[in-house]
Length: 144
Length: 144
DNA sequence: TTAAAATACTTACCTAAGTAAGTATATTGG
DNA sequence: CCAATATACTTACTTAGGTAAGTATTTTAA
Image (tube, rainbow over the protein chains, first blue to last red):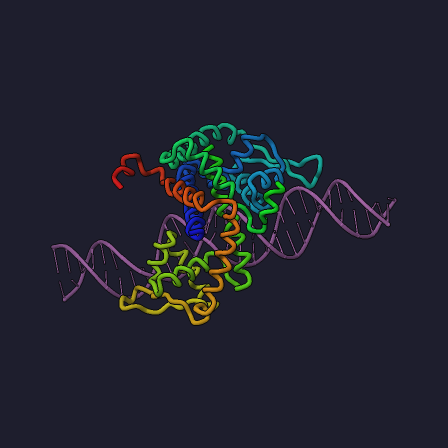
């Protein structure tokens, strides 16, 4: 049973990425790239660390994805006061397109979730949040 | 909101893989390899097509993962009556270890889900299954 | 004050999975 | 019968993400 639950989560994760990529194809973007653009749109210029902490991935993942976004002219990396940091922001090209892409992606995601009521979506979110690292014992949870 | 739901699914998917890999490290295995071994343990010898259909991945994914399982002596590919097919089965080495690994992985997954009641796990499964391809319209669903 | 430790990012290498195109074998229709 | 089509698998290339180790800059502590 547990088994099947994680299998199902894995499947839906892949399905969502596949479908989002289908929409993003028109903009010559991929899902991981979009997640960074979306992040920058929400929060404005950020350091790479802020991005990978928010997205909950490792630093090298963001380095790689940003290199592509920079090459394709969606994002810029500028030197910060702390010379170790690189401050990332959207380019003019990105600024002008992000809203449209967001709308398209949101439409798609709504479609994928059209079988669930608003209440069910909230329930699903709540249940997913209860999944935790097995390293955390019951005691850890109480200490949150 | 939809947004965050898929983000959460993606995270939990990565988290589960990461933790399973931690356990599998002892056996010099990775999660995708384990999913095939588990499949073979459940169903016995299968063609590659049966494997990728069951796991819901593409054919090349299984080809690649099996090559590694073969190299490391966990699985074998034999010629079938239909010479296009390759019939996959566990080696003796695998037969002797799969039960132990399954127990370890199940323990881990139980731990990750220890925050959920039996009922909540079922609910979660039910809700996940309601997520569908956006290509499917409401009409499609009725026609199931 | 400066040597050691910490931080931010990068590079190199690995698994995982998708698409497109290729090969070999089987099936089907004229 | 055999040419066209379909099927099963493979190969090559791409994105996505993880770990380990490296570099440059900043902070800390003796």
